[in-house]
Amino acid sequence: MMNTTRRPRGLKLAILMLSLCGFWHISQADPLPLRIVSTPNPNVFPLLLAMSNQPQLPVTLLPVGTAGEASTALINGSADGLLSMTYTAAQMVTTGKVPDLALVSVDFWNGFSVLAPQNAQITSFTDLINHGVLIAGPTSGGKGSGPDLIFQAAARRAGLDASSFALCYLPVMQAVPLLLSQAPMNSNPACNPADSSAATAISLVEPAATGLVLQSRSGDNATGLVRKVIPLQPLFSGYTAWPSDELPHGGLSIRGSVLNAADSQQTSRRVLLAYEQAAAQIMAAKPHPLQLMRIAQTISAGITAYYGQYGLSIPAPVIFAALESGDFRYRTDRPLAAIEPDLNRFLAEVVGSPIPDSFFHPLP
Image (cartoon, helix red, strand yellow):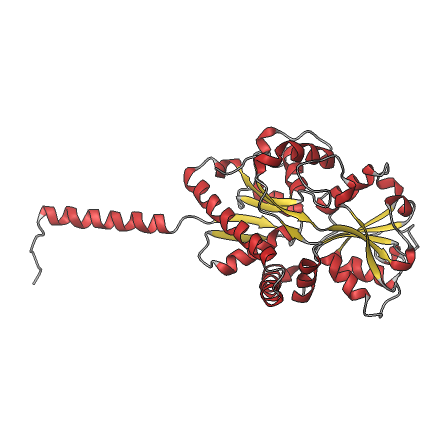
């Protein structure tokens, strides 16, 4: 028999209100995640640690192999933000690829070097004129992206340009064996067929630079010991907003459309706070080997999980050694507004174009 009992009208209203309140509560508790795209560059390391520290952090990491893939994700709307070199992000804006991309923090400050066999006696860019130099990216040669931009800007500081060297752009997993074996550069089809000599040097970012130094100590190579012979940071003199052995290499950028939305702006602030806390945690662990190794293991596992699909892995001992050496450095104590004038000039120097003021967007 059908139950024809009717609920009082006030009870129906109360149930409806409770349902709506419950829906509102769930929506507020579960904000849409900030979708961050990144190649396996050093700027992603603090995010990997932050995601491990806070599994409920409203962020999604979108791994890609190249800066071109990253810009595509930003253009088609599948990504909200970018972890990259500052000059890579600035170039996306100045070329019009992602015109509303805005830099919200700078946290990666030291890590680029030119390395060469110890017996090559390389001490400056002029020693490399007409020699083979490998430009290594994490999963691709990176021509026109971060490693290439900073190398060529450093060369210009020495009065040289790309034509001064025999350059070859390779993924790090191909570039390092090519240097250590001292095989002819043209043995790799990505290099110029006319370059039949072995490479004299390689430009690398940490922790790959430290990894190469460690690998060369094994003795099972044709180069002998490889050293960091030209740190790129001190070459860029004339800036006063940071020490001479640092440069504002990298950080987080977010699309303007995301920053202008109140709800996503709150999420952006939350993610940035967790990111910078993780960067500070990394540096604070430097005097504490066990803590530093645990952090290195977390980052190494994150790289494998997200970027193993590109054939990339970074052993935890390499990350540990790079951080412990001081050649791999994060800083979270320089607000964007405080360094903006020099940062603007530096980025214009590296990119070769004026940087619009809209690119600099400190989060309130």
